[in-house]
Length: 381
Image (cartoon, rainbow, N blue to C red; front, side, top):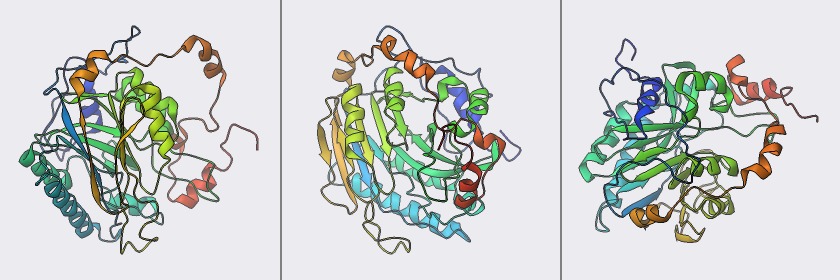
């Protein structure tokens, strides 16, 4: 904790060292305990996986498909408050006549919105802190309805004063932040003349592991609702396989501006887990793109890969599904992977871009990131 009383990410993740026996929680505001030793890799080799006792036999997931409106980077406070208030209104709607939702799941940028024109400095001004004013407002709603909340946001972290993080937050029904999942990686080498400048785990991998431990690289939050993993990443099946190997039972994937449905379906089918995708809705008066650009399609898939609920429209809506977590857990095991067949290939493989590139230099804009990464590929052109 720093002099201002803010909780550092290390404290949150270090406290997660006890997840095998019970989830560590902290209030949305307030002080945290001293850091515990970093957790070892929480993975079994016999098909089983670590859990905590379930609070209920089944629970209702609500996927909130909501608009994305970028705030004013020059003066972001008013826009953030308006976006958070809109989230609170949607939580009210979702918890109304259709009954209680045990977990409400929002997309990638419901608080700050997204503007591809932002520089690093502008995006950091727009970003929130965890905990902060925005999370406290959401925590009140969580307590009001006894509902867990999962949502993404740009985040500033005092442990990373020069970086911009994209984090998915898991908040329990008492308004406590129980986990914060960094984006694992950004795609590189696919855009023309620019790259993304958010700092992902892959971009600072060695330092991340040193600070938070290997177990935090592929996070699984063991909660009374089941083992939850979240991700903002698209088309990286190995990542979701690793989550399932570590015991993820429900994988909550966020998007903004579109995704590939087959990718979400495959996550569920190949790993035998529940998988949901929360995408943004059509967003009027956004000032950046057509209202319906990349919107809609939020859905839930069961462990067989069957779509069991989906958004019927690209507009704001709620997608719900009842998850029979007790019955599922009774028969579920790690995915069956004949790793001995493929490990020699994986060990010989090297990704196109090495990890840790943002440990050397933090790009200040998408154009600067494009210039910086232009000659960093390990593969020949």
